[in-house]
Amino acid sequence: MKAARLHLPSEEKRLLWHLRMKGPMPRTELALALQVSNSALTKLSHNLISLGLVEEREATEAPTRGRPTIPLGISSQGGFAAGATVHKGVLEIALVDFSGEIIALVSEQIGTPGPAEFSAIVQRHLDVLGVRHRLLGQRFFGIGVGLPGSPRSRTGDSWHTVKELPGWNDVPLGPMLGEALGTAVLLENDANAAAMAEYYLSSAGRKASTVVVILLGYGIGAGVIEDGRLVKGGFGAAGEIGMLYPGHLPRPSTLDLLAVLREAGCGIESVARFDELTAGFETVVEDWLDRAASQLELLVNSAIAWFDPEDVVFSSPLPASVVACLAERLNAMPLCWSAERPGQIRISALGGSAIALGAALLPIHAATTLVAG
Image 1 (cartoon, rainbow, N blue to C red):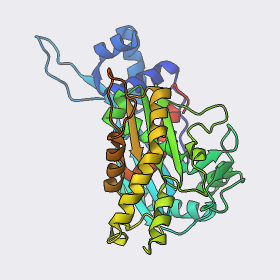
Image 2 (image 1 turned 120 degrees about the horizontal axis):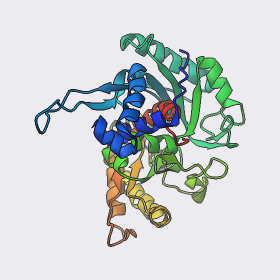
Image 3 (image 1 turned 135 degrees about the horizontal axis):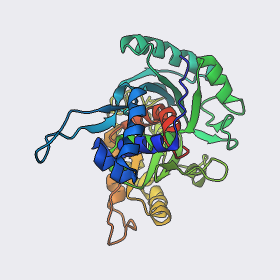
Image 4 (image 1 turned 90 degrees about the vertical axis):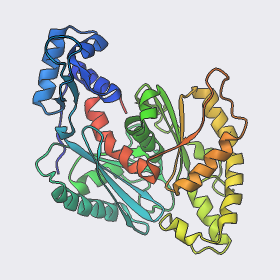
């Protein structure tokens, strides 16, 4: 599937962003919020409606005599995008429509695929899902891929990824995946992708101007969104907090927990079937959670002090029950929320799917927002 190219003026992108963040809104209120005239708003909305990106919603009753108010909202029929990522032992693929609603979410147990095998699996699933959900012929924005690691440069075509993904390091990864999949591919750090999902798909995330997402995956990373913009840093590697926890030492990551469980005699190799395979090893998991919480306390306090976030989220492919226990331990610690703005760490309601969903949102975000992702 070839990705569509949208060339929207900044005023139309601004209108789309406002509707996406605030929800459906009558034209008069939208014009006031955007500080444009009613006639200008009518012109902007007419073009977006003709493109299928915005739609008129069911009319609400007029508060007084006169015509009912007709809200405008983001149209789910505006197109769709795909996202993919690799957890330890699981490849996950997501499809989202233009409004951000989930069309499909599928996963497959795998070993350690190289870029070619990864592309082949993703393409196979996209072919099936495209037919199943009647997506052929609809506007396609492209594919996003969430990667564990950091880009070698600001352009982001070559990456430094984890050793568990051989064949992904120091190669022109963006062009390779794009050629194999026959469409535009956007690469992003997995924690940044998870942060994007929280910002778009979580009501708490949309209400917050600053969101910090801490991802426990292959390693440990963080994604920060400030006013709709992913904080990238000078070289595109902002949030690479894993460097604070050397790989040869115990660290608060999913891979570390799996290694600890194996050392205790558990036959677990991936995040698939975690609850089933760890039955009888609950004490091992509890001890690991105690240690991980103590390791993360300073990190979380640093994030609060540096960014003053309204929303701090823990995300992981580990079961929600495990992540919730970790958040509970940290929330019981002396975190440095201000007395005027007390906070709580929350766990992602998206689970391990946050990375794939955030990756799927990347092409839509890039094509229709003023802020650079």
